[in-house]
Amino acid sequence: MTRTALITGATSGFGAAAVHRFAKAGWKVIATGRRGERLQPLVDTYGADTVHAAVFDVRDAVAMEQALANLPPAFAQIDLLVNNAGLAQGTAPAQHATLEDWRTMIDTNVTALVTLTHRLLPQLVQRKGAIINISSVAGVYPYPGGNAYGGTKAFVSQFSLGLRSDLHGSGVRVTTIEPGMAETEFTVVRTHGDQDASDKLYTGANPMTSEDIAEQIFWVASLPPHLNINRLEIMPVSQSFAGFQVARE
Ligand code: NDP
Ligand code: 8X3
Image (cartoon, rainbow, N blue to C red; front, side, top):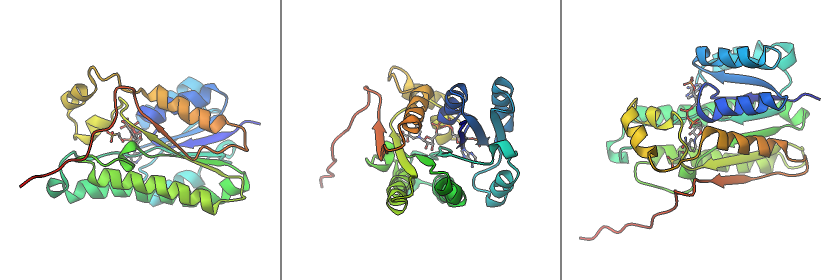
């Protein structure tokens, strides 16, 4: 039977690559994001029977509800929710960060994610579906300038484990994927549009690609139904850990 995935943040990066991966494998996909002009080519490529574009800002609960209430019947039964839409804003230390950036990250990475999850949980339970939440290594390992971004991703990881616990016995699977450095529009967004900073970060680093992460999302979703990957941390070989720091007088 054809299964249906709802993938947020499908206009770019991991989300767009995941739409391709799932659509090519025969899934129906609801692709969401604000930039509708980037979703339409996905519909054109795979056909309106395979990809449905739902254009909304995940922070707008009313628009989200309208999009879900107006799904075509063929897309209304969702088996997999991929909570991928998200962003970092700023790299400044906390004492120099803007409250606006922090709120944008919390509204997008946390509030929107729990709103959509809460909305879809009843049907995911009914269909013994699955949830894949895109967190980050930033939610596990602190680094300078990670402050609120890392906090939002720590929430995503712990929320996912909590869901797993509450959904015990329901057959619903919950996975957190925690990627390290991957080249997408992430750093251009984080730096408020600094393409040079993004290029410098990734040049020579052999970072992961969107397709690398899409493949992991697809693998997790394709496992036999008795298996649950709780969390999957994945980095490029070129990235690892640095030590603690000590400030001396
Ligand atoms: P991109 O910037 O390439 O993609 C982000 C996606 O999120 C876009 O499709 C964007 O769509 C969507 N999005 C952001 N804000 C909103 C909003 N308010 N409403 C609707 N959609 C929104 O970045 P990535 O693909 O790298 O990021 C995907 C996820 O992976 C994020 O949660 C990110 O935190 C996480 N991540 C990224 C890593 C990396 O190194 N790249 C590593 C670890 C985690 P649009 O702007 O069109 O609305
Ligand atoms: C993005 C990965 O290492 O830039 O979540 O924080 S990192």
